Structures are given as structure tokens and as C-alpha cells.
Length: 336
Length: 227
Image (cartoon, rainbow over all chains, first blue to last red; front, side):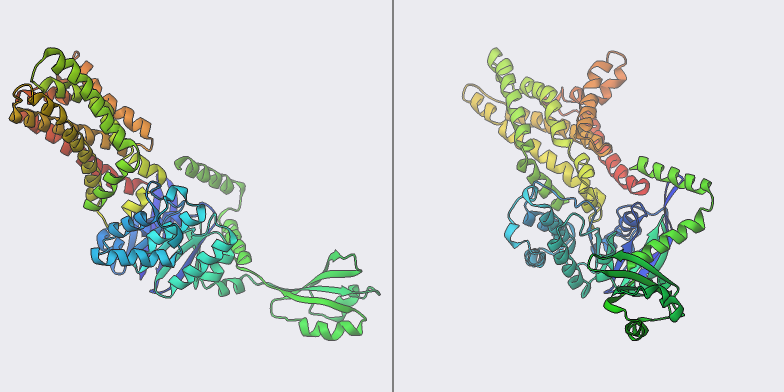
């Protein structure tokens, strides 16, 4: 159980994280989503006790990370961004060192290390120097370092960055597997990843939480209009008259004129109307042949962009506001 | 502390740094063995250790200390250490004693020449032990200074230069004011080779060491707040 209470982090006058609060229950997989520089990594660094919040409280399994760091940190496995590793060690040596650092008991250590090596698929390379491993394997070694000692809470900062598609699916299924026994927080800016793995999503922008919900609900909330993609053969050009025949249609738009004489249209209606059945009934009567009919779905991406945009508009009406944000960004870059 | 110590000590010998440090010591030590003991035909080993401490440590210490925290910070591995349940104090002490252990190894190697000399004359073993103790104390103070330097920058080269400057500057600053002799580590080593343990020197070497270690711990803890 992770409790984040009114946490703020300031760097001088810039506010990196602005008064955020949320809970993560045991066994939950939560995704942290936000554009670059939104405060994802800062928040994760605060949860893991790497940096101290300016104000507010972070409690891990009942232990305040600032007041009882030893107890709180014992329950956390952290895989930082950029995969920091000791290149002069072998994969196994590194994982063993992490186990020792995390106070894994001597008699359990060997067994634990072997277990995570197996889980992360590192058996073939465990005796190689980390220096000589490929990016994907380095990522896994870092992950193994986070998993060793079986911590309750696992925090992964952009776990799939820089991996090839096969490795990404492997890491994702590993995270899903982990979610069964552990509490997992992961950050990402890949939306499909978050919607696949996570039960709950926290969207954060400019240091503020702008939404906490399930991926499905977020997708639904972004849904203002229903749209249907339609590919037809329409020799008599009856499609233009369709709008008069079906009153629910808000707009018909020709998207593409295909070489084989078919045309692709997008038909938009209000969110409550589903026209698919009606179209199947009416179009043949108008001598229009349907080649393809598909409901286009809104994605988490749409929800994300919509949420980010609405906060932007709410905050900066004039040009002055925009200038301020630019300055803020500059300051942040200088800090880095 | 033991965990960090073990890993750091191993790392010295997984990279060339540990070997280079020992090599430099033996090189310096051998040159001065020729220049002092052999040239004068004396059984007195004090000058030998003094000269090696004065010039050898100047290269060895930055080598051993420059990467301590600077590298961890640059590569981000400091995140792994500081998010582990280990305390900052145990991490700092682990790293400190790993470097001290390398110095201890060099001191064990250095016994070679006194053993050779003992075939040709009487080497005063008690004086030799006091000399080596003095060498170790000076090295510990220098390591703590180097460690502090390494904890304030991400750049190993800058850390090394700061260490060398702090070690060398008092040699020249003494001409301006005698106050600077109190931070001249080598100045505190002068009495040890004659078999004399001066309480004043002992206390000041130890207090420099403890002070630098404490400042390192405070700085690392503080960085958590401002980072």
C-alpha cells in the first residue's frame, strides 16, 4: 500500500510536482502517464526516497519514507530511468550485490538471486560482464536488481524504453506476471503499453494530476462523437444524398478515392447513436455496395491528448501564459 | 557497511586502478629505497617511508578516491545505493575502508625491503611499525579528503585535481603563514619515522579524517533535499 499525501517538490521557484495525492492498493498495477518533463520521474524518485519532497508525506506499507527510511525502503524494488548498472560486475554479481544491499538474508540470498535470474531470462548471460551485454539484457539485469528480495512494491521508470518489439512484449508479460503478487507502479509515455498492463492510470502534466481512472473509463470519457469508417462502391454517387435519408448523421466526409473505384468515407454521429445496423439496411437499397464497415475506436491516446489540451487551455488563455511556461521549461533544462 | 566495502574493494581490482595504485607505490618506494637506504648504506627506513608518503600518496590517493562518488553520480548508480535500505553512513564508511584496505595491502608489500635490509643489519621493528602506522594515518586523512572532493562533483578529473591541490597547497602556503602547516598532512608524519607517536599529530590526523567523513555524509544526505 502506497499513500502519497499532498506532495510538492520545488526547485527554487519552479514547481516540479504540485500538491499531488493518490493511493496505490496492494497488488495493483498503476501506470504513470505524462508528457516529457511532467514530473513522472521526480514523483518516482520521491516515492523511492531518492529525493526528499519539499512538503507532504509518502507512506509505504505504513512507514513514512522520510522518517523511517530503512523500513520503507526495504519493501521497494526500484528500476530507475536510464538503467544505471555497475559495468565492471557480471550480471550475477550485480544482482547478488543488490540482494545484499536490500538486506536479503544470507541463507536466502543464493536462492533469491537464482530465482530472479530465471524470471528475467538471464540464465545464458549471468556470468558475462554487464559492460558487454546488449541494451535489452542490461534492462533485464536492472529489472532483476529491482525484483531481487521479493519486495512488495516494484517501481519501474520507463521499463521498455530502447527495447526491440519482441523484448517489449516479453517485459510486458513479465510485468503482468509481477502484478499478480506485487504492487507495481510504472511510468511510460507509450500509451498502448499502459492501457495493456495497468489497472489504473494516473495522468500527470506540469506537476499536477489531471486524471486517475481505469484505461477504459478514460477512453470512454474522451468519446464525444461516434465515427464509422466506410468503404463502398457507389457508381451512382448516392452517398451525397445519404445525409438527407438518415437524420442522425452529423457529417459525411470523403477520405480516399481508391484505384479500384471504391471510396472511403467517415461518418460521424453523436456519441449515443450507433448507425452500423441502419447503414447495413439502407445502403443496399440505395444501390451502394459495402466493402468495409468499421467503428473507429477512441484510444487512450485521444483521452490523453484531450486531457492535456484541456488543462493547457484552462491555464493559459493569453500569450503571456505561454511565455511563462516556456521560461519554466528553460529553467528546468538549466537545472538538468 | 561490509556489503559496500566488499563490492568497492573488489571493484578496485576488477578495474586497473587497484593495481596501478599499488604499482605506483612500489615504484616510488623502490626509487626512494635506492636513493635513501642504498645510497647512504643505512638501516634507517624512516626517510624511505617519508619520501614515499610525500610523493607517492599524491598520485595514489586521487586514483583511489576520485571515482568513489563522482562516478556513481554520473552513471546514476547512486540511485541504487541511496534507494536501498542501507544508511548513507554505512555506504560512506564502506567506500572509505575499501580504499584504506588498498593502502594496507601496499604497506604489507612494503615489508619486502626491510626484510632484505635485515640480512645486512638490525632493523628496528618497533620503529618500523610506528612508521607504517603513521603512513596509514596520513593515507586515511588523505583518503577522507579525496572522498569529500569526489562527493562534491560529478567529474572524476575535477575530484582528483581538488584532492591534489588540497594535499600540495599547504607546502607552499606555509611560507605565507604558519597556520597552513596545521593542514599539511605530511608535516604530521615527520615524527612517526623516528618511532615517536605525537599525540598532537595523532589527534589532528584522526580529526581531519573524521571531519571529512562527516562532511561527506552530511553533503550526501543534504543533496537529497535540494536535488
